[in-house]
Length: 389
Image 1: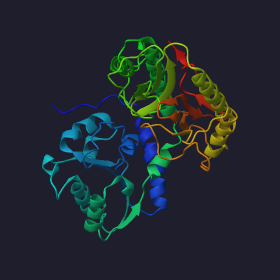
Image 2: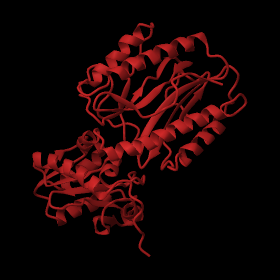
Image 3: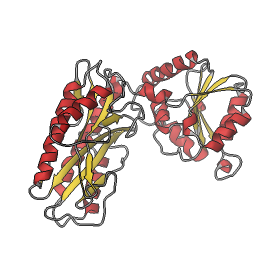
Image 4: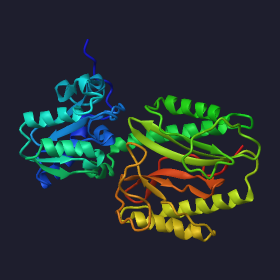
C-alpha cells in the first residue's frame, strides 16, 4: 500500500517562496540546475528531516520545473514521500545495489539524471563544499562539458532571514528548551547520576510542551565538577555531589528547527568566583541585547558584550554567538569582532556566552533570539541565574 503524506509543518506556498529565492540566484549566476547536498538546506527546501545524508543523495532544482527532484537511496524514498511537500513523481529512488560499492554510487544516479535531462552541456550549480574529493572528481569527470559553479552556502545565507512561519516553529522549540531546563532543575540532586538526569531531560525534549512534542533530540552537553572546563563533553557515570557545579547546553527541536539554551547550576551555595563570573556574563548579555536591532552589525553586538564584560576583569576568546535555525548552527554570521553582517528583522541567533577559564572551571549562559523590526525578541524564557539546588 502506498505511504500517505504526513502532516506538513509549512504550506506549499512557503516552500515555493524559498525555492523562488534560490532560483533568483540561479538566474543571476546563469545556471540551469542546482544540486543541493547539505541536509539542512534540503530540509529547508522540502521539509525532509530524515537523517539519511550519510549516503549520497541530492536535491536537484531546475529552472524549468516548479518542484525540485529529490534523488536518494531506495529505502529512504518512502520517508521523502511522507515528509516533503513534493509530489511522488519528484522523489526518485536509486537501487540498494549502489550502496557500499567502491566505484559506482548514488552520485552516479544523480549524474545519470542530469544527462537524461540534457544538463550535461549547461551551467550547473553544486554545493561543492559538502562533497568529498572523490565525489567532486566524479562530477567533474562525468560532466566534463558542463560549466560547474560552486553554490556552497548560497542556500544557507538565504535561510538566515526567517519567515513568520519559521519564527512560529522556533518559538515552539524554544518552549521545549525551557521545559527541559526546568526539568533539569527538578532532577539534579546529590546522589543522582549524570546519566539519569540526562535521561529525564531527554524525555522532556521528546515529549515537548504545550501539546507540541520535540521532533528530534539535539546533542546534549552536561558536565559537573571537576569537568566544567570542558566545552562540549557529554555526561558521565558520576554522581552529583554537594558543592558540584553543573553546566548544561540543550536544545528543543521542532521540524528541524533547533533552539539552544545554556545554564549553570550549583548544588549548594555557588562559589565566590562563580558569582563574579555570572554577574559579568549577565551584564555583558544585557549590553549585547540592548545593541541588537536592524542596521547594527554582528560585530557591534560582540563588541558591546566585550566592553561590558571586560570591565569585570574577564576576557572571552571565543565568539559570542552564531546564526541558528535548522540545525544547531547556520554557518553564516557570527557575533564576533569584524563580522560586518548587518542585522535584519527575523534573523535568529544563539547568543552564546559560555566561557571556559581553566581545565576544571567554566561557565554557561545563553539565549536564542530573534531580531525584530525595532530591537530583539528573546525566544527562550528561562531565568538568567545560577540555579542553586
